[in-house]
Length: 380
Image 1 (cartoon, helix red, strand yellow):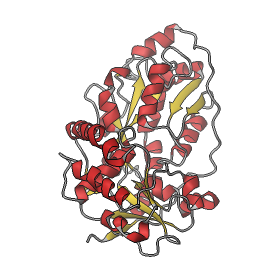
Image 2 (spheres, rainbow, N blue to C red):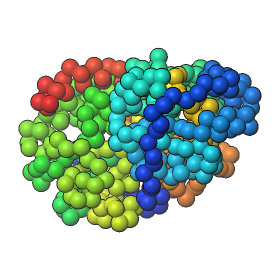
Image 3 (tube, rainbow, N blue to C red):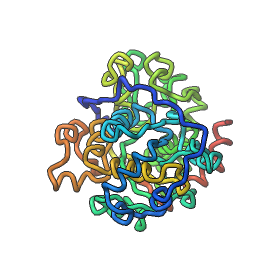
């Protein structure tokens, strides 16, 4: 049996976030600057950073989607962008949506002012929808490792966590050490994951972890689906989408999800969190998965979309990810430059060294397994 790796001591700043207003229903007026920035592949090619800021402020809006305030510190990140560029209104749509919901919104709202400008996607959905994106390289492009970005700038990875088990210590008195523990009678009706694995990267990653822990591999995640079938047969799987509210109320007492989300829903959330919520990352083959940023090629606010990318890649925003326990893509470069928040890095347990991350090819193969077997196995 593996030993548990507890995560404690993170000073999250993911509370007291004000809900952001919805988007206008009318299309943005097209301008010469709009046209220029729609095709700009860098700030330099568009006339420089000052020109980008001016154009984005002239647009006056940015549409983001599927960014819960407590997810990887996005509440603070959005507030930071608004404070830095007060002339730009940020509209945050469907904060609890999945990567698939983001893509659906891009397609269904094409040509509308409400369409997402930027996307934050799990890898399977990302790789299946690259025709929706446009190339853009941020000013600190060299700080992002080659394996974490598309060579032409079509997408860039921005942060990752580790798959973890969150649990309410008042309802589960013995801390789980690995996924096999969750098959026991003490977990009857208690275990949930963050959505449908065929649609949501976080839920799919729970299946990947189960495969790694049960004799499968990143090349074949079938044993992960089999594990969840056993969990359901045991009566332990709870088909309820966990949220901070369901964790706080005790409705979902055990959740397999990214470490930064489990941490955000515990004591770090203050009065809105579960003060008895604990987070464990099993040792051994820990699982990581970077989420990626991309710009909608038909973004209604193309300059603001590019300015958001610049902000997200900056040390300011990358450290905000880190403060929530999410490891940013530019971590190595920030350590070398002395711009990393060392206190936050220490609290997160240091950069992960033993984590498995599926390649693009493995994610594609895993998606086929999930499409073929998940519904048949789980009866949903």
